[in-house]
Image (cartoon, rainbow, N blue to C red):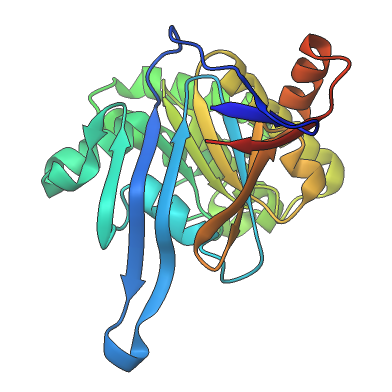
Length: 266
């Protein structure tokens, strides 16, 4: 990756010792429909997310943000190109192996929460761990710890129908963070939250990246994107621009105090 200076030329910040990306999308295209009904949701996306990196994805409605997230999470398949999570090509996996990889390596925060109505908050969160063979008592302890981390420990034994939308959203985030998920994908994770609670949730996601996870978040809010290391803007299914987020900008300013930092070019 190179960071272009506003004074011309470029300054390389490529680290040959940087670990392999957790997520890589290589020339990914997604087309819905055929013929006159054909819609290009994504057009030749190239994107990587490394361990410890928090990437925000922004763009107008219809730009392909949610499609990008569903492909990254293995919930859909590209029409062309390749999606790799920790070096594993998702397109080469059978249904069972893909489900295993998603459950163990990927935490996904859905816009509509996707909680199971018949299970309590703690049971919704612990279910993926139990499916992986973690004993029930340990899985519940982990679920309770995740709920406490999000500031909603009192919801452990409450069912989704007895929660507000914001409470359900935080339970869904806790479910995405339980265990040692290497990749967290979040589709508008603060959409149902007030500003203070939203900031607290973003701090939790930021902290998870700071200890080695990778995260990619779709958001419409520039203030929320400022928590990221990198901000990717989509338009009409393609990457329109890419720039450092608040944390990267602060770090680069410390390294290059006399030069303005322009856009990122990969």
